[in-house]
Image 1 (tube, helix red, strand yellow):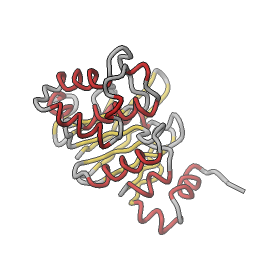
Image 2 (cartoon, rainbow, N blue to C red; image 1 turned 45 degrees about the horizontal axis):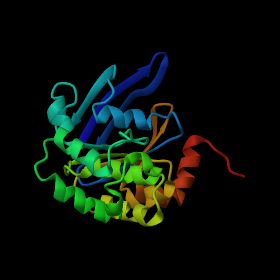
Image 3 (cartoon, rainbow, N blue to C red; image 1 turned 90 degrees about the horizontal axis):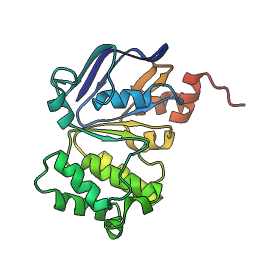
Amino acid sequence: MISIKNLMKRYDKLIALDNVSFVFPESKVTAIMGENGAGKTTLLKICAGILPFEQGEVKVDEYSIINDSISARKRIGYLPEMPYMYDRLTGREFLFYIASLRSLKDAESEINMYAELLRIDHFMDHELGTYSKGMKQKISLIAAIMHNPNNLLLDEPVWGLDPLTSRTLQEFVKRRKGTTIIATHSPQLVESTADNVYILTHGRVKLSSSVSDVLEKYGSVEEAYFKVEGVNIA
């Protein structure tokens, strides 16, 4: 579980997150939606311990991301929207490097299992510089989940993925038992995968609801998004 209270984040004079609070419960998938610049990626980076913040409290399984950051970050898996990789390493070498940073003892079996699941096992010994965006996304996803984190943060996880891998990822997310937070622009992904949804506008929460309630009230997540954002589609 991840809990956030009265979180404030600024970039110079720009307020990215404006005194927001969230509870991301155990065994639930929560989607974060909003236009570009709404604060989705900033929120995930703060939860992952990557970005500092000016005010508030962030706890990961009751561990403070500030006061007990090592314990908190061990319980996090983070898939960035634009993963950074070393292009001269092979996919396998990169994942073993990440495993060594996390002191994983049985990394090989985990890497092989996820590589086969994501249908990238035949490319594991090719240099990352030769990979497509979708293939890099798969490697980054393996890096995020191979230590079996209780809390998984996914920033636009299906962007660049082929339909089969996208479906595989969605099924994996729905089956896992921990907390999952997905930042996305895709209403379809929210409807097919998430239990709860938040919509952010200019760093503030404009909608907080279960997906089932959104569908009952608005008919679709897309329609709810347009209503909250004040968009009139003629």
